[in-house]
Amino acid sequence: MKANNGKYDILIVEDNEELAGLIQLLLEQNGFKAQYVIDSITAFEMIRKDKPSVVILDLIMPSVDGLRLCGKIKSTPDTSATKVIIYTGKKYESDRRKALDLGADAFIIKPTRAHFLLGKIKEFVAPVHEQVY
Image 1 (cartoon, rainbow, N blue to C red):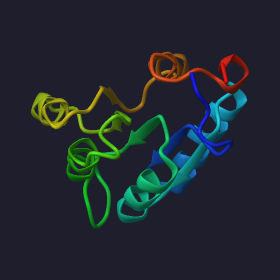
Image 2 (cartoon, rainbow, N blue to C red; image 1 turned 90 degrees about the vertical axis):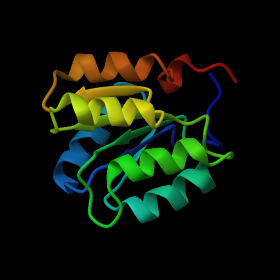
Image 3 (cartoon, rainbow, N blue to C red; image 1 turned 180 degrees about the horizontal axis):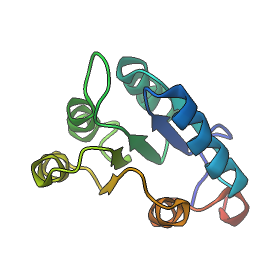
């Protein structure tokens, strides 16, 4: 898999900065290049500019909620190929269905085991040491 201009391959969109930092640390300890952002408006700008392979997206966000952002990512031509993993505390089947209908590639309910989240991410992007350039 191709690297993202030497920047990061995974963008974490999570308004809980402590949790976002922990996810970033987990990913980096497992060979991924990751970055986090705590607001969805900035997130979309970063996605358009940096073209990460995967976005890990919380649904409950200030200003623009995760469902809207997911829909925007998937309906915008230059970001539609971005893989979106919804990572949320919302447990309702209706939320999962809406997210998948909007184009989300996976839906994971928090909290979850680290190896499960890592496994899902590895379906979409390889750790840096495994990437082919």
